[in-house]
Image 1 (tube, rainbow, N blue to C red):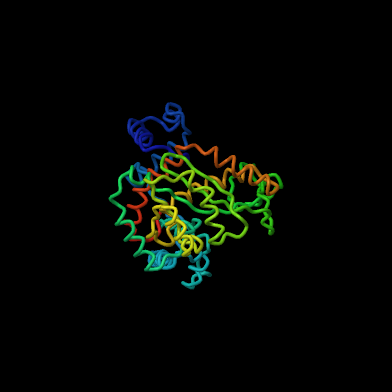
Image 2: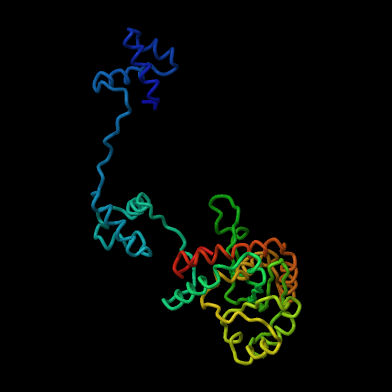
Length: 331
């Protein structure tokens, strides 16, 4: 029977009640006369034109089992559908696909888990206290902070990429991302950004200890720092060494000394590194020289508005950490 709307079924019943034949009604409404007859017969049986629910195949599991499936998945969200089914002992009763369908109907969808730093209770407490202390800063105050960090780039990058391809061609040579057990040439760089969109990039030596880090700062920091600024660095050993702290004090650098550990979500230069890695990956450098040229070019080509927008997000980042009570955020 053709699927027709309620209004058309009501019209069929109305015309048939006036004594018209099935064929005449079908011609007038441009539908088959057998469809008209089935609508009328159903009306005589049920005294209704509503499209009543069909019985269908009986469900192989009870409502209680379906709720239990969702409850188990919520208790341990990293269990697969097969593992949930096995824990309930219903593997012979319902298929894994059915369990997946029950989980989706309960609002539990399979997704790639976000990767975030491990936070202990002490980490979360320190993050919360830090954000409480700096939550009153204005947008202009945040722009006085100079964020800095190191980042490593490789010729064979593991950055995920999107590809447009036809169906059934996933493993075609043209559409796959080539990987290598050997990471290829790698370069570590140090960078710093400022609230007006300016930035500096310095190539680091192969081994970055406290002495080498101070040489990097000597090369790059004076080009960006002024007495009104606050210098921000994370808690890497070479950053927190006694000689490095003495060096910064000797140079008269105002250093932020209470940076909370495991907090890349409030260190906005981390987002800039992600943007830069994606841009460098698209150039497909083959050698260390090509890699360094690509890093320099793409870093300098980043629009200043990108850095300004990152600074504008700092109050929201602090608020997000406070809302999560120091736990991970979406940044």
